[in-house]
Every structure is written in C-alpha cells, then in structure tokens.
Image 1 (cartoon, rainbow, N blue to C red):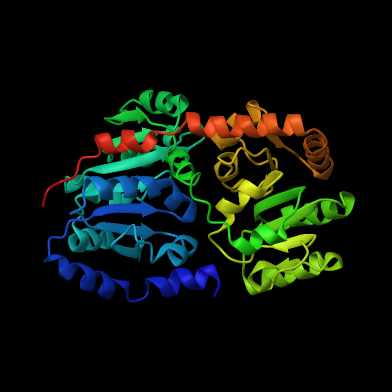
Image 2 (spheres, rainbow, N blue to C red):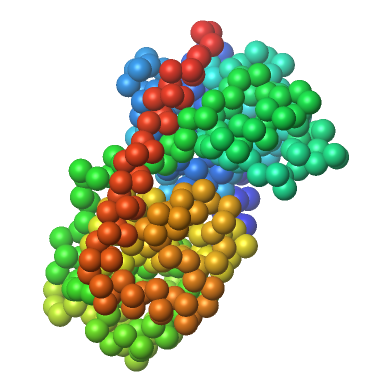
Length: 393
C-alpha cells in the first residue's frame, strides 16, 4: 500500500479508537502527549519518552504521528501506551482530540507546527514544549508576513533549540517566546544509547568483508552512483539499505545491480560474502553501520536532504554524503571536523572514498573525530526533563 492510501486508511475510524482508549474523555487519564512527524522525529524524541517513563512511571504516554512511515513502523512501540495518527489540524479536530485525551503536557519534536492544536493547547493551559528545534532565517517565522506563524511560537511553554543561531533568531523577534534553552539535539542521546547494544544479526557478520561501504537510506539517485562505483572498485563490497523497501523498488535494485547477482538479506543463506548485499528490512541499519569501512548516508540529491549521519558517526566511522546537507547542523559540523566528506557528483565521491580506502591512518582519524563529536554532544534529554512540567488532572 502506498503512503497516500496509508495516510487515508490509517485515519479511518480512529475517533472510535481514541474514544475507546480514553473513555470519551471521562477516564481522566491525562497522558503525556508526544507528536512526531515521522520515524526520524520519533528517534529524536525516543530518549525523552524513556526518561519521562523513568521519572513518571504512573503516567501514561500517548504518541502520535503525521506520516505513515512513522506510524506503521512504531505503532507497537513499548515506549507508548497509545499510538495514533494525528487527526488533521482543524479547529474541531483539535478540540475533539484534546477533549478525549486531556494530556498533562504536550511535546512536539523539531519542526511540528500545527496552528489549531497549538492555539487550543494554549487556551486550555496545557504545558506545551518544542524539543530539538532548529531555526533558519529563511523560515516563515522571520518574514514580514509571518505573523500567523509567529503566533504559534507564542503557544509553547518552553522551546528547546539545537544551537545558538536559533536562540538569536527567536530572541530578536518583537515578541520572542517566553522560555528558550539551547539544549542541543536529543538524537545524540538516542544514538549514544546504541553504542553498548549491538543488534547485528549473526548472519550479517558472515556475509560482510573488508573493505565494505555501508550505504544507508539510499534513494534512486544514490543507487545509480553506487552501481557505477561497484564496477570502478572491484574489491569493494557494498551493503545497500534503501530508504524504500517496497516490492517494486527492490525489484528495480535487482535489475540495476544484476551483473553482480545481488543478495537480499531476508533470503540470504550462509556462504561467501556477496559483492552487493541489499538490506530489505527495516530497523537494523543503525547497528550495521558499526561494521563499515566507510559509511554512505543517502538522500543528498533529494530536496529534503540527507538522512541521519549520527547513526554512523556514533560508531566512529568516516562518512560520505551528497550535496544537499547544509540545513543539517550535525552534517556541517562533521564536515568541518573532517569526519565527513560531501560530494557533488560521482567523480568527487570516488575521489573522497579512494582517499580513505588508501590511507587507514586518515580513515581512522576521521572516524575517531566522528565518534568524539557524538560523545561531546550528549545531554540534551536531561535538560528537557529538568524543565518539563506536567499538569495534574
């Protein structure tokens, strides 16, 4: 089922499910409500949920998603007592949703701004937080015609931003938000938790060999480059974890890499490591990065930009990514530290990769810089929990 159909069908009948879960608002459960756009934002908020559960074991947790890619993968997460799609942002839906759920506090992750939900939360006096936000001058909040968007900022009890530039932008507004803290990015805490927990499937260890490029969250533009790379560096194994794992896309990968007879991990058996190994399941990529000689982060040719570089950086690996990375602070930081290299086309990618493959000392230095960078930035979750106040029912 495509995402549009999932978006529609997933919301069908959900008011009845919400009413069943919360007793038509009569049970006074008052959960903590966290809203995430998709899977990436969930990972960003995961440590906040874990820490909240430890500090408030008596409180229920309600988790909502906007996108099917988040909901479908995390609808059974043990971190939440209830998981739903967020009803569309209308005045009636906002009132109805809050009548039913009556949250003790609301936490929005990164870029989630829903006008009617936020204004209704404010009217009801429900503490509302924005976590791991990052602001840029070109955003609508900072335009002359951005008054409706600035009104949403005033609805937050506390805004936790990733960097000093975001703080300066918000503070310069005529009516700045009441409370702003530079807490950093909770994703550092999230990936930091992965260091001692190696969830690599045993079979994977038998199917990889050095040198290996772990290419994660790839899109068709990435995969075309990687197919060419496979021919130009014969000794290099490529482990490919595509962003889309639907049947049609996996079949397109089989055709693209056909001359190397790609092996799909879900159907793999013990044997010699293949030239091309395709990870056709979700949820294991973050552990696989630790086994890469070099890691490649996909999405660099997409308008939305690259995927999560920190999942590779935490394992002290040098990182490659495409040109659309500049709105991601961590990618810019990693490049400045020479822990990552960006490329604009195939030739610049090949040059950067060959430089690391030919020089183990340089490769180790880049990887170490990546790992230290992650460790130095852990701690945002504690700052959020220190200031997160819940409303008693």
